[in-house]
Image 1: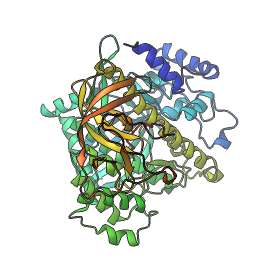
Image 2: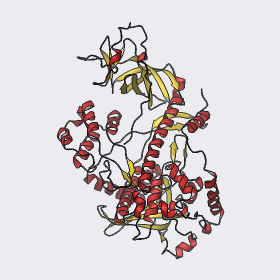
Image 3: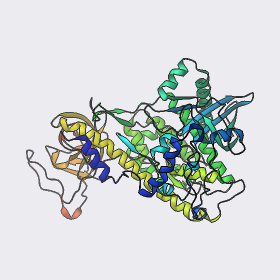
Length: 583
């Protein structure tokens, strides 16, 4: 049994995760530590790092002048005082950084929704050493056993964090809604807030059951906001995510599905509304915004999905064949494509394998200096505003929105912003891969004591060197693995690329994606999160099977193998791990 702490350290080093902050950042952090040690009414004085001379070249707006909290109550021309509102912060269990909170007021004509976000830009000046390090990290990296924050803990978990009962600086989006929760107008304001209640998602549901007035009002507004989104179509993937549970000694004990409460959706709807307003304001004032974009699916990917899963397209309101004749992928708001995918998602409901296939046929979301639209949301305007503690794009948008009215960004948008967007997208992809690999490490750690045991498995993918599978049992709700060609008994199997199957040369038996099989665990590489299996049973007889496809024509077909002889893997083949893609 390998030591888990040692494995964690090796993984973090191999993933090149940032351990601590550079010396120049530590020097800036000292000023924040002095602020934390000051009296409550003076703790923000001097906490802002001064702006460098290069701020204009970088396109930042700098920081709001640091003044005492007490003074701000008397000078609300600089900051709007929202501390009289009932402001609620809802987060997962164990959350340390709280970057968003909600207030809801009912009026004669509708509602006023306040989305109050931690004002990180007050503390982190553009171009400072801390800002450069935050831009480099781009995101907080989350792992099953901990996180590597974009910002130092003194900010992320203290000065910036919206802590219950504490005065905090906010950047607030105040949205006026009619009785059906249609957006009538919005505004952004630097504010002063005090969170009334900080609760978990589970506690929020319990309070709704107890008919808590504020929670009921929040749930009502969220439901109405979602109804408005539904009018233009709604695509809810419902993809299943997993998490690792740890014991008292800090070692993994179980991989389980991540369960969400209905209260998650309340916060999500409010955040979506604020993010949309952010995108609209950036465009209205011609600022150098960073937009969250999601391109429409590629025609070839749609055609491939039609070929592999034709049943998904049955009863579709859109004829996919007609669609593909004049389909332009540059139009992310093509309602025909959106309606087609909304139908596919509905057909695949509660089937993780099919949902995964639909996800693979879609593009990945990315950051862009231009508002190209968001296909999955079916919105033309969308940006990130609500998580500046853990996403650099949000911090950038805060700075742009904080610029004086009428001020434009000029040439900054033409160059630096576009380059920054590319870097943020690359960092996000890297972070997602690292997060998936870390969960695989935990799963393999649990499986290392189960070598020789048999599992029910499902074929997830086929390659010429083997079969990618997923398994589950009481300990591991989901784990990926590979069956090499040499570990498929009874025949020599050849990859049929046209059908996407492995076909037995002698018996005609085959394996394809979605097949249910039984496997035995043979080998585990915990650090890499790789698990090798051997098939026990499950091959199906291929009906009217075509001759096996030769991936390498020059090699010809292999000679007949004896059924009791182990079959070697094809030469020069290198196993690669199967991973699920996110859009």
